[in-house]
Image (cartoon, rainbow, N blue to C red):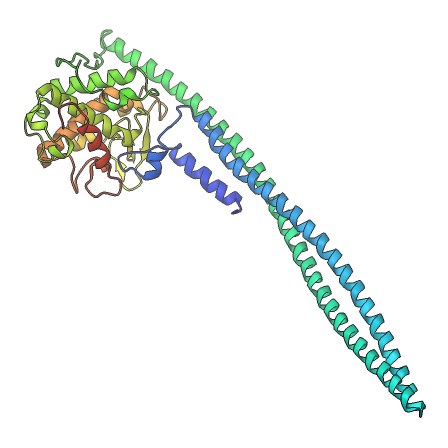
Amino acid sequence: MKKLTVTKILVLITVWSFTACGPMGSQMTPNNIRTGQFLPDYETQIEEEYEILTRKVEEALADAKKRKAEAEKSQTTAELEYIEAEQAEELAKKEQAEAEAAEKAAEEEAQKTEDSEKKAEAEARRVEAEAKKKKAEAERLAAEKKKKEADEKKKQAEEERHAAEEAGKKAEEDLAEINRKKQEALEGEKQRKEKAEADRIAAEKKAEEEKKKNGGKTPPQSIPPTNVRADTSDFTKLVWEKDRHIGPQAKEWTKMVYATIEQEEPQLLSQNPAKDIERFCPKFRSMTDAQRLNFWGQLIAAMALPESSWRPTTQMVETTMGKDPVTQQQVKSEGLLQLSYQDERNYRINCGFDWNKDKLLPAKDPRRTILNPYLNLRCGIKILAIQLKNRGAIALEKNVYWAVLRINGKYSKIAQISATTRAVKGCQ
C-alpha cells in the first residue's frame, strides 16, 4: 500500500478546492462520466471528500500497525533461533573438545603399548574420535552460520519494526492534518455562504431600487413554453423520464424541448435536416412531423446523459479553453447540455444567460440563469440548429460543439446516443 503523505493530501485538497468537486462539461472524460452525481451542498461534499482521505490514512495506519506486529513477531522468532543456534554452537564446541581429548588419549596409548592388538584398538579409538571431532566441527560451523542468519533476521525485523513505527507516526500526523484542513474547509464554506447571502440581499435591494426608478415596473420573466402542438400520446418516452432520480421535472423538460423545437426551430422537422440523419434514425425522412419531433427530443435527452448525467447544476472547468470573455474567468461548461456564457457571443443568439445576476449567487445555485433547465436546453437546441445549418450533420470529425458527437473522438458517445434514438417509434 502506498503511503499517503501530507503533501499528497494537500494536493488532493487543492484540486478539490479549485474545482469545487467540479463535474463534467462538453470536454468529457471517462471518469467524469462515471462520477456524474453531485451534491448541491458543499458542506456535505467537504465531509465526503475528507472522509475518503481519512479512510485512506486510517488504512495506512492499520497497515503500519499490522506490519509492526509482524515485525515484532519475526524479531521474537529470530531471537529464539539465535539462542538455539548459540546453544547448538556451544554444544558442538564441547563435543569437539571431548573428541580432541579422546583422540589425543588414544594416540598416546597407541604410542606407549607394544602389544599389536592393543595398538590396533587404540588406533581404532583414535580414528573414531577424529570422526567425532570432524562431525562436531561441522555442527559448530552450521550452528555458527545459523546464528549469523538469526542475527541478520533480528536486525531486519528491527528495521521493519522501526519503519512500521515511523509509518504509524506519519499516518497519525496525516490524520491530524486532515482534520485541521477539514475544519478550515468547513469554516471557509461557512464564510462563503454568509458572503453569498449578503450578496443576495444586496442584489435584491439593488433590484428593488431599480424597480422604483422605473416606476415600479420590472421586465417580464421568460416563461418556459410547454404548450406542445403535436399529439404526444403515442410518442416514445424520452429516456430521462425513465430515471426515477429526476422525478416529475423530467416531463417538464420534455415539454420544453418539444415546444422550443416547434416554436423556434421548426426546420428541424423538415425531411432533410442532416446528411447523417439515417445514422441516428434510419427512417427519419419517411416519418411524420410528430415522429420527427419525438426523435429530436430523444436526441437531446440522450446527449444530456453523458454531458451532465441529467443534473441541471453540473459544472466543469475547461482547463484548455482559456478565459470566458463574459465572466473573465476560466471557461466553464454548465447545466444539462454543458453550455458556457460565451456561447451567446460566439453563436450570436440570446440564451437568456445573465452573468451579472448569476455571479452574485453560489456556483451551483439552481437560480443561476445558465443552470435553468429551460434556458439551457433552449440554448443547446439553438446551437445544434446552427451546427446543422452550417455543417449539415449531427456528428462531425471536427468543429463540433459537443465532444460526445465527435466522430472517432476520445469522448465520443455516438454509438450509445444513436442506439437510444433508433429506438424511437418509426425510426426503424
